[in-house]
Length: 106
Image (cartoon, rainbow, N blue to C red):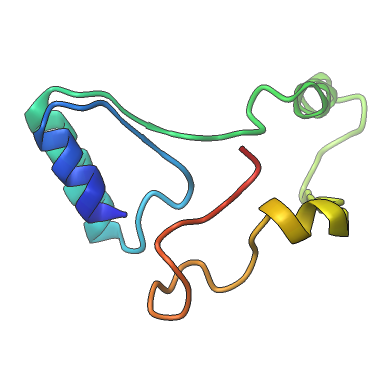
């Protein structure tokens, strides 16, 4: 994650990363610094940010209609047909036990 992002930033490419952008805080800092020094944009995908349901939930919380919210648990109802082909869960944060790529909601 870090190496390709830093290399591309140094070549002048804008960088779009999925979550997690890196495994460690130090790697994240290195990516950010490379993008700043190269004058390129760095963006991290937040695929549910503009989802209508998320906006509705935010509106309900902000309006106070459901009271004070202390905890939210979000469960994704991912069907087996989708999971089997394009949705990876597991030990993604440890490259030694998985791969550098994480297939997500995108």
